[in-house]
Length: 333
Image (cartoon, rainbow, N blue to C red):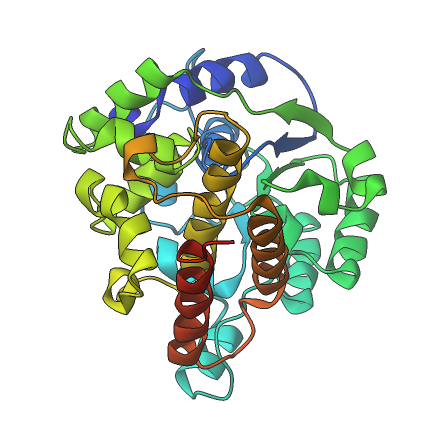
């Protein structure tokens, strides 16, 4: 990864962690703070032919192999859908099954992939500098997958290092957490995050608004900008929802719609008790309905969030979500 693409707060943590010893790290904290980038930076440095104080050299054969997603001594454990999104190759068997449409890419870390990783960890290093296993997001392991990893963490081969990155450490087995050296991700300040977003090409007018919309998480804000979200579209969202305009969410995934509505509900609850909103500007919010109605809406959204990745009809789900939101926002109770 080019040094220019590494956020400054990630680069600082990289140097701190590389100065410490350990065979397994757990990078934990809210999503959007750079867990995956930091995990990959650690792996690059561990496998680099000529690492320095700032990590990998970026020039050697090992660094190039990681850049092209083809390093023989690196094993990635990710949901297949995420690996395809990030450009990492799947196993030959998994790719064949998906190509043949016998199944869809998984959204969790499969047991088969974990078994391959265990076998990988027991092999001899191809390049002689050890091996690395990167697990992200680690909370996507089910209990069977997690237990398979646990056995390897308990008795790790001498030349393999593990880095687990997660935005939900509480969902991991306590035994896995206890066998890793924990690191809480640094939360960058607003000025640093805004400057970095602008350096990534986010317009100056959009950066602070999208950063607030993402709850102060810069990588989430960058993803929003890359998806075409703007300060104007975010500011217009509350009143568009109040009018029941479905096209507001025309290119949004169901989980993103639920997340946006939860943020809207959250801010209206804050306004209702006299506090400042967190995700939207106060001027962009409609009048808040009763606290009782908002509380029930929040419960409904939380329940939907738990099942939003199930194979529902996306169009019907969107109509239901926006219809419910419109009723709440236009209530006079």
